[in-house]
Image (tube, rainbow, N blue to C red; front, side, top):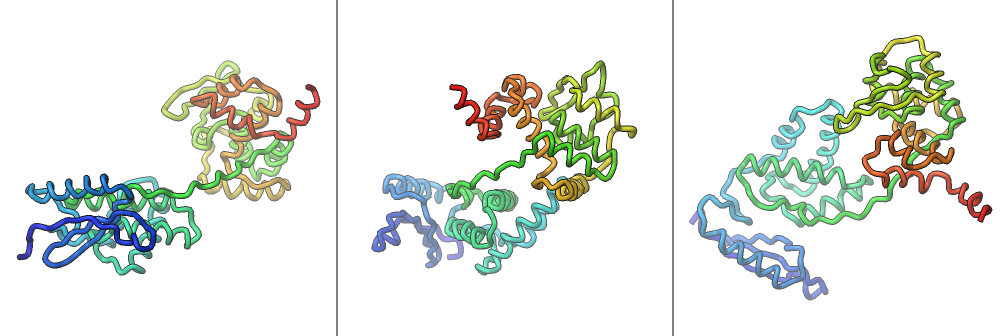
Length: 332
């Protein structure tokens, strides 16, 4: 019989090796498939078994193990996911991330996404580590693509990536420049437009997308207006250093640069100035760091940074100038 009712069971496949993980098995048309239940609890394994035995008697419910749906071609599904309308940079990133997933599927001989199991999800994570990349984003992209592919084909199983635990990644140390280093970087800018753009980030704490959208109309009565995250508008004062940059600048706003151009020019300027390299966001981080160095109250800094919580500001304050702890200790 082509669509006979499947039979389910549970087993500890590797108990003889001291591994107590429970597996679920499905037999249909004299064929077996296994999936890790990711638990050592017999109670939880039995709950899974009860769900499977109940589901097989309902019509229009896709059964784990041997689905009656058509083959899901990885190439077609990956192409469809990459072609979803999104920003050009995001499309390129997604495409590159899924190249790893496709290479893994090819290595495993998987030509049908119906066969992608939780065991393979585990193997994919290890594959990413072996490739020398941090798996968090790559797994999220593969999981999203697989979820959309399964839904499109009427497949209702829980994603094989559910329950996958990734090792915590070390946080990258954020680059921070002091005021002298920022001045040195700005002095190496190849154009007045680039210098002004960097000044907006360094002396006002603007994010790069905010700086690129800055217009002449945003300046009024010694203040400037900015529309930040969540479309929240803020009115902030213009400091002396930023005002001197405005006075020096003879161009117009908004300043027209692509982000990759800003990053490329910043890398060149850092090398020319003899300071450590950073990204455009390093200007914003430096803005907060320099307020800490100047002893400005963290609450005021939170307002100027437009942080949602004081904890975000205090996180910067807490690690910016460890050498200043010696000065504090000497005063006690």
